[in-house]
Amino acid sequence: MRPWRGAILLAAAVLAGAVVCSAKDQAPQAALRPASAAAVSPVSENRLHAAFDHLYNLEFADGVRLFEQVANAEPESATVCSFWSSAILYEILARQGTLQSQLFVTTNEFLRHQRVPPDSKLDARFHSVIKEAETRALRRLARDPNDVDGLFALGLIRGNLANYLAGVKADYLKGLRAGEESYDYMKKVRALNPDIHDASLVLGVHDYVIGSLPRSQRFLLFFLGSSGNRERGLMYLQEAAEKGEFLRTYAQVLTVVANIRENRLSQALQTGQSLLERYPRNPIFMLEMAKLYRQNERHREAMQLCRLFIVEMLAHPHNPRILGPEDGLIELARVEAAQGSLDRALETLGRVKDVPNVNPRVATQALLERGKILDQLGKRELALAEYQKVVASSPDPDMTKQARNYQKRPYRPGASN
Image 1 (cartoon, helix red, strand yellow):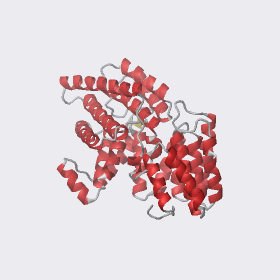
Image 2 (cartoon, rainbow, N blue to C red):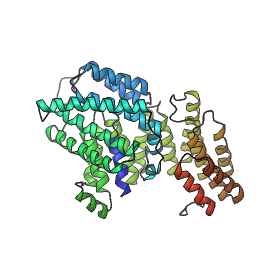
Image 3 (spheres, rainbow, N blue to C red):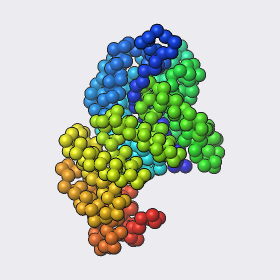
């Protein structure tokens, strides 16, 4: 049942964007603020959007600081406290490599991604903020069971916990249960106020993913209390992507994934390019778009983005390190290999080991990729030497398994390896 597990990770991540809807039939220059669960002061609202902008540009320190300021300035709002917990979780996932390696991936590859234990202080802070957000939400709901801020916040909290359980702890069953609770809370929010379009994000992912499963798996999930509808899910996702307030950007990320799955590649590329333009300081978008261009055989655009990514990583390294030039070198080598320039790709992969403070996992990936290219070139002995280096040094059990398989049988593109 792996396909639905990937959905838990995507469905629970709470990131952000912003949109202002113009009012119709009003006086000139008048505007209506989008319906939102976060009823906060104008100053706090501006800070929230600024915080999300930092977050989506991977500027965690500035983003989390602003979320904390808003949460302290709005002690009655459970939703803003939930946003704060989302920001901390996003940093945990980014440090693990979960987000940047799987952002636009529609397969179950992320399930094999080796989990890196989270920083203990960051982990403790996440759980502390989650607890505070839940306390606020329950206090509001004790006064009014239909309080939208409290219900929406609990939906976000359960979503964050689902994300944490699946993405950080690899506990998919508990993650599924938390995701179902998140869905139920967002259904209540939508019933009370259909104009809070952010709630449609969770509803859309849930319905689309479960509705896209094979009938046998949907039948089994039905007995676990889960059901979905693919077409309705797409409608919800598009609604959140067009009309949402705080979750609009993440909904757009998910529409990229959905469009790839539906083979609507031009729409996926268009939305992805828009995200890249709006968040130019986020290299994850740049690298993921390079991958998407490569997969669609638009090699020139892919190569340009790879080179731009490498320059950006050299000029503005992350602290803590999330991505580095080595990530761009591996993708560049894959583009070169896709063009048939295997010798050039081999040379590019050889440069990975020379990157200062290179990520050990990425360095090992480069060795594995070199072995695969050497196999394609018919240089079996050299390929075996690279595979042995992977077996001896890999921090990732999955890469070790792949290397051992290739030691037994040479790598061949398109073959079941």
